[in-house]
Image (cartoon, rainbow over all chains, first blue to last red; front, side, top):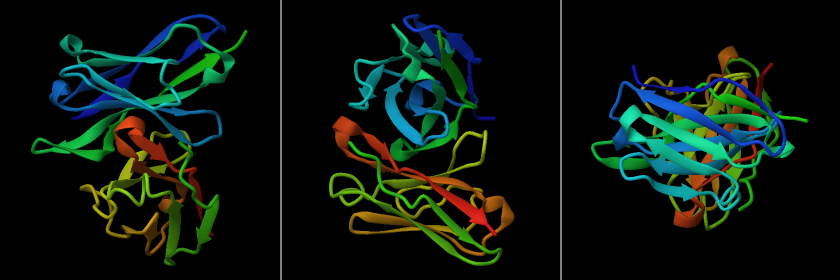
Length: 123
Length: 111
């Protein structure tokens, strides 16, 4: 079964660092882009960025460039989203998702989603 | 990059059809045939329903269809069912710098 399994909920204080993970299984992890999406409480989906684990090619939404770091460790089929200094406004659900691909062609859509990681930042 | 504009809510009775619009610009929706739609039930992860404007992934009922005209894309749900009650988001490719932009989201209510 193709799936993305994300790390558990986090509760942090402002100024702390954090790295959450997204582990892929059931498919060739290095052949598919992995993206990250934010959903603040009661709000809509926001595109954060995407990484190709095979070569670490990474693209960021202008809104999140410099605010977060996306990385991947292909040896353990895991992608990461990290913050160096959290703010209260980072409180949200974060989803990872796989970019749809077939026969070597990458579509502009995300077909497999993780279950989400809740991040709460509060003093 | 602003979010694509969707109606806040739409509703319909079982068996009816509803259409959700998604309005962008020539830099996103109007510039590429790369619009996708996602269904999200409360407390759940989004699910891909439509990609490339009108293509349905395997397993998505053919009651769901997509189209595009100019800067506006649309998702139509025909034969509305109770389980279709959810939030729906459009998403468009917006060029290599921005990559993707999501819509503001629409709540579909089955009366």
